[in-house]
Image (cartoon, rainbow, N blue to C red; front, top):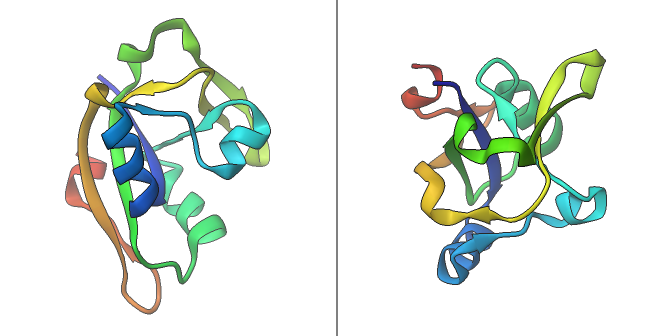
Length: 114
C-alpha cells in the first residue's frame, strides 16, 4: 500500500472535514486537479511551496483507494506526481497531523516515511 500526502492550511482542512469533501486548495482549483506528493517528494514540496508557513497540516491517503481518478503525471523534473481528478471524500483520510515549522524547515510526522 502506497500512501500519498497533501499539505494545506489547517483552516481549509477543517472546512473540508465539515463538508465531508475536499475540492482542493486554490492552486488545485486553478489546475483542475488536487496535487498530492509521494513520501519521496513531500519534503521538497514543503520546501518549495510552504517554506516558513505555519498553521499547516498534512494528511495521508492510500493511493489505491482513489481508483481511476488518481493519475500519476510528470511534473517537477519529470517526476511522476499523484494528481486526483475530482473531489476527495474526507472519509478516505488515513491520518492528519500538524506540519510544524521549526524555523529552518518543517517537522514531518514519522508516519510519513513508514
